[in-house]
Image 1: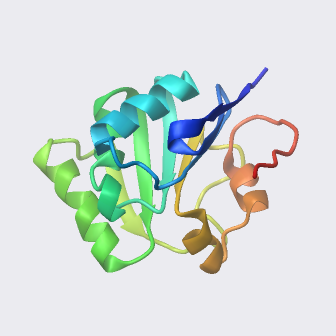
Image 2 (image 1 turned 120 degrees about the horizontal axis):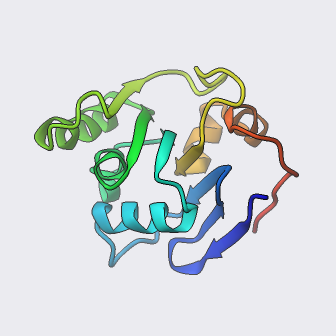
Length: 153
């Protein structure tokens, strides 16, 4: 059974095993690598497909790369704009993670994934993604497994 955990410092909602993680960007003390370690620890997931929505944020540039480097996950990031895309690609290339991590710019409405495909979804800046058309129903569609709806403050 998936668990719901709140990690106050990250302002997150995590669903372990079948995971959705909402990252608040109040991350003053954490590097992207530290954030990736917290995400992986909170999710309790080391392998499978991780979808990183809103990748390439200025405060967590290397998060997509670090999620792949710190686990056996295949990580696919979706960037909202070309600048975010370029920021997210640089650490993937620098760390030699092509093939384990990749990013692209694509529509989030609908997400370009089959139903029940992702083992973990990491969401950065949900408000910006919602402005581009993303809904939690769409996120729930791509997360593997079935579970009850989640609400958060």
